[in-house]
Image (cartoon, rainbow, N blue to C red; front, side, top):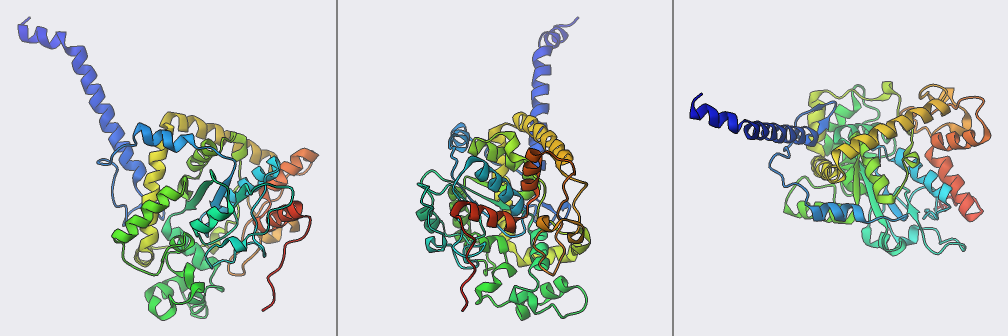
Amino acid sequence: MTPRSLGVRKHRPALLAGALLLALLLLQKRNAWKISRVNINGETKLFAVSSRLGEKQPTVKECIAANEERSQNVVFLKTHKTGSSTFQNILFRLGERKGLTFAFPVYTYQFAYPEKFAKGFVEDLPSHAVEFNILCSHMRLDMLELREVMPSGTLYITILRDPVRTFESVFTYYRNTVPAFEQVSNVSGDLLATFLSATHLYYDPRYITNGLAKNPMTFDLGLNSTRNLVNDAWQKELQKLELDFHLVMIAEYFDESLILVKDLLGLDLKDLVYVQLNARTRGDRIHINEDTSRQIILWNQLDVDLYDHFNKTLWKKIQCYGPSRMKRELEALETLVRETRRLCLDGGPVGPEKMADNLRPWQPGTTRILGYNLQRNLTSSEYDQCFRLVLPELPYHAFLYQRQYGRDMKTLPQV
């Protein structure tokens, strides 16, 4: 045996360990690249701008800062057509169960949307309460005004969704209420493609009622959604949002987002059980081909960049939380959700004509919104739990308002 072969044999364990470490590092980098890509219409393309291979990993200090703040007080900025109704229902149930105080609009279900939020839009604090704990009704963000209403230490959360799917959903749902969309309602053929092919004919940025017609998520976050340029000023606004919000959930990673919410609010897994609410029938969704997808992306560049930015921040927070810990929590949550749905639901989601009146979601007239029927022979406590799980936004909102104030919600004054 030669000295050379003896040396190789002597150092073989170290060489093997080094090779294993290198393989693990390469695998870690490959996985980081996978999870940071942006999913559009079921595949990654067009604006999957960058992988995380060269990105700085979260520091220990950043991870501590991300996990040390816990509070029962929370603001949820409910963005349009992003899965926000499902998370709002979780907060409704949490607040009702714990006897927390909701900050409700003075009139109806929204804080004078699409006007920017103002403290004057909030109903008075009830006499029995010392502060508001939860604010989760539709609004357009004004962070300074919000902080005038909510106590210090409040946690701020919102949710974003794939911009292509979001815009298609907004267009379909609000086709008869957003002026820019209304103008194509009488056109034959593909209405969305018609709008996108000549937006200059239909969209007038001077009217706030057109806010959802371009970069709707950016508009809900209180920013100027009419511009096309993603520049340094825009990047500063993204950085400010990242400082303002403790968590920006991503609809495509809803369960992962919920686990982070659990950590922020100090909740139990059972607090996070949900069913998908305010979803449309599959047949009412517009088919998005590659050309339409590209047009939506070009028309909504700010939403695209917004989503990409906070998709990355979500995965940094997951890295801080710990991937193996996240995996265990996800499996436990999935089990709880599956068991609860089996207990509560009489089958899957159904159209409005097939469900009980008190469980029927509001129907916008442009699409059919699905709901659920409950299992028969539930015990009284099971029925209460299951009923609230599937209760649509508007009746639950009205119920909680009446419970908190002892009176019905106020309607908008006649002009």
